[in-house]
Image (cartoon, rainbow, N blue to C red; front, side):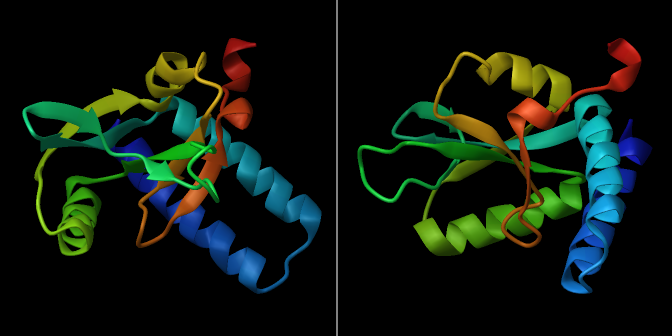
Length: 143
């Protein structure tokens, strides 16, 4: 599984590079489809933060105001990527007790599919921050 997650990191970096170079929409679409499959199958690392005796999964809120609680869950392709994020979040928040947990993309999406505020996953955020919307994550082999 770890190899799959490493491939995911490479593909997201490749997508960003292609997008920056203004590659064709077809090429970007094909690569995005492949990324959706890898996210579905990969074992990814999530961050948990213990604050005041409660442990919560780290989420990236993107709402413009307090009534909008839309969020992405940041997930990481390796412990090294997760450690970089923990360092970033510690610098931003100033405190917290972070832990790592693992699950497949498929399991993460299934756990949040009923939450209307859940938008998807942010791969290796904040360093990379490649987002994948929940409704696109799938595996054609299972259809």
